Length: 250
Image 1 (tube, one colour):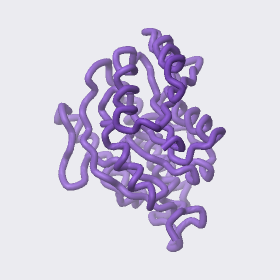
Image 2 (image 1 turned 45 degrees about the vertical axis):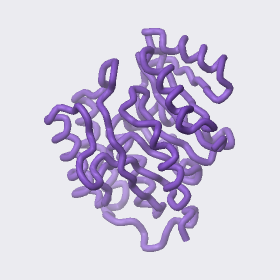
Image 3 (image 1 turned 45 degrees about the horizontal axis):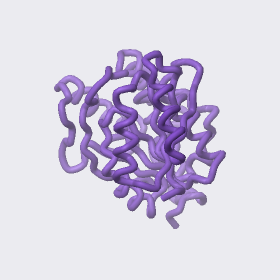
Image 4 (image 1 turned 180 degrees about the vertical axis):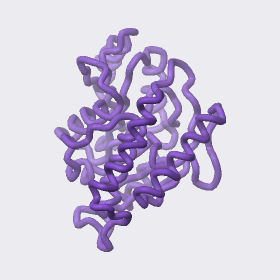
């Protein structure tokens, strides 16, 4: 699994980063971790530098300003593509994503280009969310499906595993969304271009410490981005009949 990189964006996550790094390596000892820190004022970056100095499988990418979730992941993807990683994860720093699921993602990625962690397969698997947040998330999934045609139960989720071929195919310069919109945009690119995508069930737990980054601007961006993706796809609501030739699935 030394060909696997877990990308974890951080902003003011000083109480979480040591624990999440330890948990990742407890369940997947051979993966590498890349923390992408947006110049956290709480000292997160200093802690990350200490972790990286002590552990050769932990890396840190410092960004000058708080630029948002999407650009942080894009920076992490570029870093991964410059190196020999074949599998690249998205994961939150706040323990809302369980590192114990990493081996299940990798098993699914043996037969898929993109593995989505779904909170809604076979029921709702969310702990400690208020009802309003749950309704917003479920409504977003329905909204995305109605407009784009994507048949996934959780297109806005942030726990994913990409194979390298997708990240090589996408024009990262044109991925400018944040938050929900970023997750939708990356998923839509893979789907509308014929890559093979699968979903696996995960349990999502509300962050243990720190403050959620969700706000109304992120929601509004997602509402607009869905329409942009539909127009960008030429109003198509389905992928090509044949798989993308770069897909691992024949």
